[in-house]
Image (tube, rainbow, N blue to C red):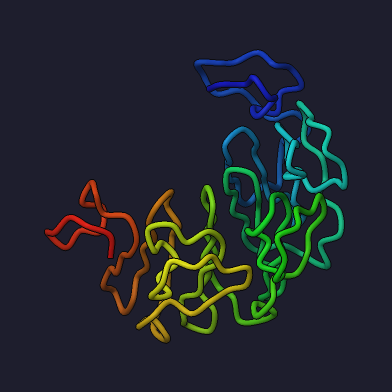
Length: 214
C-alpha cells in the first residue's frame, strides 16, 4: 500500500503493491492496527508504532515521524488489545484503557494531545474490547458500551450531539455487549448476538431500512 509517511514500516518511503515485512518485527506479534498514515502492533505485550507522528500518535514522546517501528513509552504493563484512529491510538492494559495522539480522543477529560499514553477516565478496569476511528472511540466495559470523542451525527450514541472528553454510556446498551466497532460516522455493537448501530445513516449504514441519523 501507500508508504508516503513510512506507514509500511520498512525503513523507506517506497510504496508497495505487495506485502512487505515490517522492519524489526519478525516474530511474537499478536495484534496489528492501522490508522490514517501510521500503524501499530503488539509484540510480546509491548506496542510498537511507525509512520506519521504529527499528532504524537507513535507514542514515543515526540512529534517526529519514523519509517521503522518505535516502542510506545509509558504503558504500565502487557497490552492485550490495540486500536488505531486517524491520529490517535488506544490500548487495553490489564483491563484499563490508555490512549495517545490527538486531542479529545484521549478520554482523559481534556482536549490536549499527548505524545505518550494517558489513562482514560472511567475505563480503569473491566474493559474487554475497544475500537477507534477518525474522531471517536468506543469500548466495552463490564458488558456496557461507552464512547467518547466528537459526536457529529450522534455517533457516540449518548442521545445528544455534544462531544465527550470522557467515556460516556451508550443509551440502552448497559449490559450484554460483547463487541464494538467505531466507524467514521457511526458505531455498531453486538448485544446478546444481535447487532445495534447508531450515528450517520445517509447511506443506510444503520441497517434499519430507513435513512437519517439515529
